[in-house]
Amino acid sequence: MQEELGELKAEVEAGSQERVEEEFGDVLFSLINYSRFLNVHPEDALEKTNRKFMQRFQLLEKMVKADGRSLTDMTLSEMDEYWNRAKLELNH
Image 1 (cartoon, helix red, strand yellow):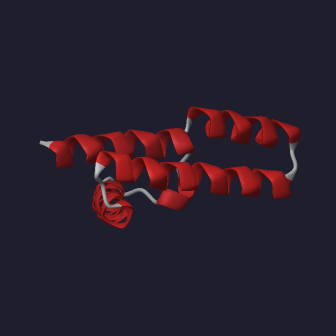
Image 2 (image 1 turned 135 degrees about the vertical axis):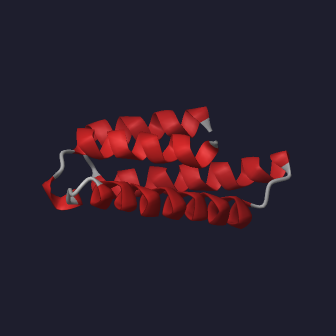
């Protein structure tokens, strides 16, 4: 995986979209193979991550609204603050 990530990074820096896509595919393939070694079902793991993301984002939206703000008017840094608050709240 580390080798594939290195190759992806090199292609990103080189700027060839076609090569980036190819190397990205190699990284995904490596992760899938590694999941088998770990006895992890990749689709289940991705589904859990998607649910976790949705919960956090929905909480972030509620927090922003409760503060009388709008996501469209916020900087990425401000959104990160809300994201981190949502992560903390859901992890407790």
